[in-house]
Length: 358
Image (cartoon, rainbow, N blue to C red; front, side, top):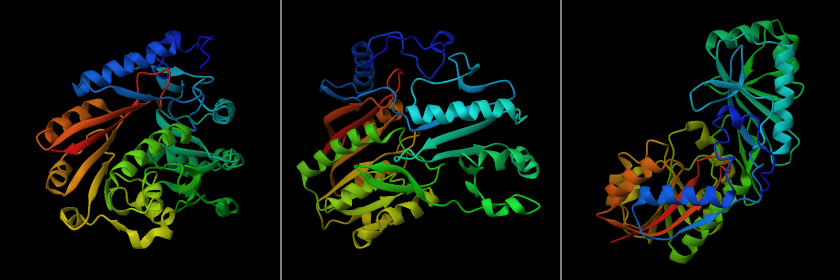
């Protein structure tokens, strides 16, 4: 990965590219050492890395009246005119949005924005997550949102509603339910979701991780998988296609709706949020867990009491991973570790560990 040109924002301590000044092999080693210290294990950590650092197809950033970008290490909002970590099409969307807002100020104190491109590179998505007061003002003003909609599909607010184009000729703009569209993919299968749906930052690195998981599952050959934190089905769909019976657990109700759409061909093999099935003893079972930053919490006990012979644990937050592994240590031993560098040029990474019941 070429790093000949220093990002100008790195010199301002931008949190988006904290490792720009070191060569890539050194960066990977730093991440491996960090993960190894968290796991407290002598097991060799395997590394999967992308072909380029310009791969993110989703970008979350902050906007205020004075800046539009990412925070520095000192929590100062750095005004970005570009970002070299983005897929070229996503950077094109970001630059367009920045220039648009410069000409059409939003006049908000602070808010969050997400831009996303779809795998076909023919649609831009924008999620506007502002205060209710600022959202109402934009809806009443009408012009800015109507102009933005010429280039972006727009979702608004924590309820993730979609801007209704049909309301443009009415006295007031309206919001409607989000419409599932192809904003992500897993191993070349479309995954329908919203712009605001949580996904990993890019399909390329997501597939690196998915392939590792499928290899573990194929080696173990279970009949059934318990999946905690299934989201829209990034791992669920490939597991179902592999022939697994799947019991999934997810708190995001909208993600469950999308999961049902994405896996509708395999409805007979899928159970959703049925905790009573975790303790079934009739099938050879493994668990796949992808919890939030807070970790497994009470679900650890469900895994301990299940008949899962193995646990595959995916984490982007090594602290909660380390804590959960201590809880599971009396019952499961660490068998394999892979680090996927989903976030080159930063200190972040994704880890997956394979645990086997003692």
